[in-house]
Image 1: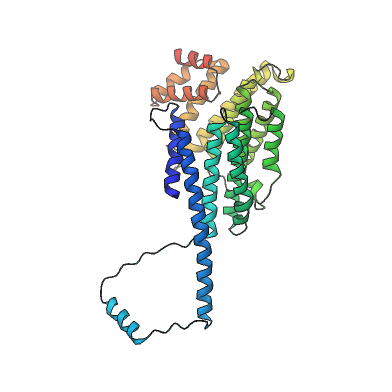
Image 2: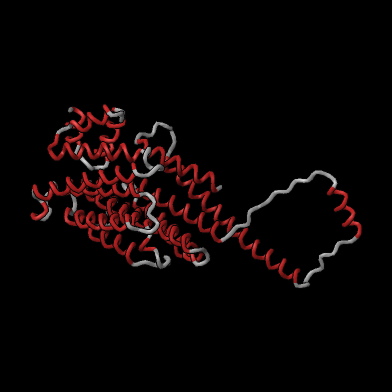
Length: 375
């Protein structure tokens, strides 16, 4: 049940990433089935866990002399006889509190996925999903977390925060909440910590998740040209989170983090063009600074990646090079850098794909994309 539900969830993600559904499958139906399977799986695991505890208690009683373990002679003979034949045994892994937590978190992730899918069209369904999620978080995950180690607690807390952030975004897109409510609730989710281990705030996972959620807020607001000053404020906070993530003791993806910082600077550049932003932020000096920052961060991503054997051949290197070249073009240095990258061995299609993705992610405008491709 668990594996099937995971496959269904992954299939929906693949359809969403493709942008076009030519599979003939209904993503909503797939997610509904995945949620049902995860729920059945968790119910079965909880039953198995309780039975395992009862069995362990029975063994303990036997060890203390509660039940005789001796066999009659006929039983012993039978055992001796059968050991001479080939035998098979099925080893069943016991259900642990970690198993329960893993399934509950997978279910919560799928509920978040469903929120994103249903946001524009079904506020009623959002309420239903949130009812399932809140019961899961309050009645099960919070209990399971008390009986696992600190890293597992941290991972589970991040899953609950991801769900909360996704549900907030879906609620805003569905017109259920307004912009200030979205911003404040998101900050509360990450800063009014509950159930997490003491080192949660210092972990790269927490810092990156917070930054992702703030960038998602910016994206939701950008589609309605809403609250440019809130967008700016949240992107500044996202940059603070990313800077802290580069210094986190468990940071393992430094090239990607530096590249993400470059992306956020380009997002801030887009905010500048939005009517209603504070006058002090809407000027050529600020624009030049943001472009310079983005170029610096992409350059840093390239340097860090190339200095690591495991990262030197990563797609992050080519992507950062292309983005840096695009930034140079936006700064008035022309499009020669992109042509040079193609001559140096980065495929033309890779360049085209990255530029398209930059437009899709609102790092550049559609008009800028056309100008870049034309040149």
